[in-house]
Image (cartoon, rainbow, N blue to C red; front, side):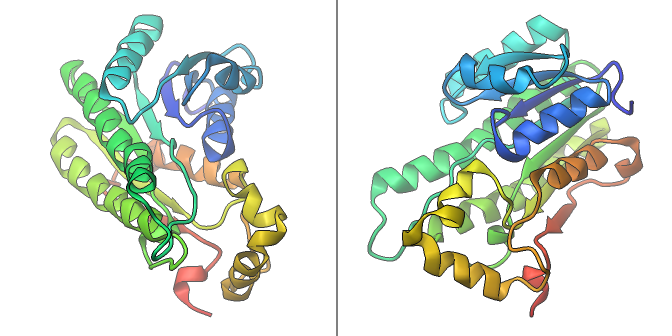
Length: 253
């Protein structure tokens, strides 16, 4: 019960790593604001797994006005925000000669712009209430090394990793820990097409070939456990850390 009495806001809470983080925070005593990108119904599916310790919210984090409303609504509902997890994002191929402006903008808005403004608004709230708090942003193994099929995703996740360091430096004097989890390939709905659809068979085979561990895709609940560690007192000395969890892909093979 490391988070008894704490309030956690989790964007991207309707599926994947974000959903598992919501459930694990609730299991350890937190009240959880579960945020879906488009509808309260999608958030409610995760809320139903949280044993009465969560409320649903909807926000397109790429729209700053919606971010402002979200943060205000969560504070009005729970009184404060102690923990922020930025897990919202989109994932789709952006290849040379196949990427248009709309695809580029969607990728940047959901993964980088949204992360920035949620961090900014929640960080400001944490400072104004006297300091202290935990923020974890989701980077990616793709932000550490290039991905030829995911050019823009790789770029924006690299941006999230370094933006995390900058927020950490800015907020550390207020006792606010800002860190980054960089997952590798993790079995979530976001990449179900890669794992199941024949047109992605070549990409899936490449992932298997380049993964040193026995698993091509990690378990999202394990990633959630790492998020909880970064938000716990055991990680009190971590400011601007990037924890890479990618089944050894970046270590070489």
